[in-house]
Length: 415
Image 1 (cartoon, rainbow, N blue to C red):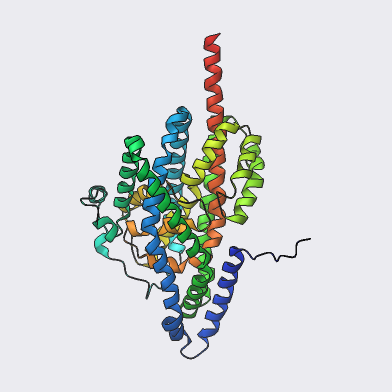
Image 2 (image 1 turned 180 degrees about the vertical axis):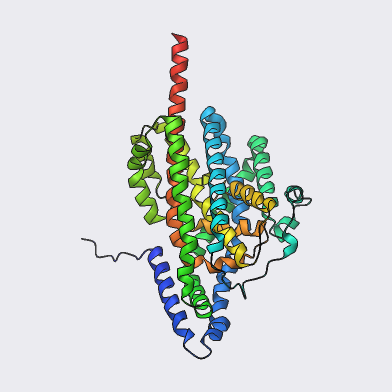
């Protein structure tokens, strides 16, 4: 009989930090000078936590995207399966972003106007037209993008390096090994930062509630509600239509068959951890074992529909907090950045914050604004991870059906 004590999950510590920090912040409201104390002595610790995120975002994006590109060489081996998978993933991610942006713009009048004092300022000079943004995507030198955290330029650099490594063949293998090693190292650093996140959540919630009042939690529920509305609409509209029209599968049967994987993803908030049960559900729904073995791991890395909705909603929300109105060009920038960022992003709990930081940077919104929502990020994460893995399974079922039709057609022609 095991006598070892079961370790409490990270989710438990985050929720505990959220509750205790909120209660302490509430209590400091009634203490003379309490808010000032929180600002001077507690907020700096939260700022350190945000600084760690700002530090990790550039290397994570660069190394993970290069590794994502390197892994794409396998797509050539599986031929039509590869391009069908990529087209589906990219298209559904773009649809998810559009749904998120439309909903956020529709409901932004009801979003709370939270104070951003002490959380950086929006530089209005970053608000540019689309053509200027298009030109600025392409770097003129390799140093400036990293010094200035120019995320779109870093993405372009990562894509070019990845393509170069693939084209170099065997001679590019040492560089590929180096990037994969660096990616592994920085992923471990990221996981360390995520593991200490309860400290950041506690400090952030203490400061935010003490300075803005406990009403902020109810206000943030509105933003959370818009994100979940986006999750639900994307599932009902996008996945129902695609599995019905492209795989001939009843949406009701599809979601019923996916329930075990959805429940697991909702509780663990990890696409990677959900892979085994997600594969089992997809195969039971008619997906091929071989195709699922390719499509699902790839999806856990590059398919982030739920995260796309989360980023779109929170980008609009934080922009409104800073008094910023995103232009059409900037919304296109959000779509481009978020879609490209999904390539190579880790399918682990909390990785969506890294992507959000990257999108915020691309349109000039201070990354420090994440402090306003990070306390409830776990609640966002539960829904976005669930949508992510459902999209992966939908793709596996659809591609399997399309490949089966293709093989049947070939067999008929032979006869």
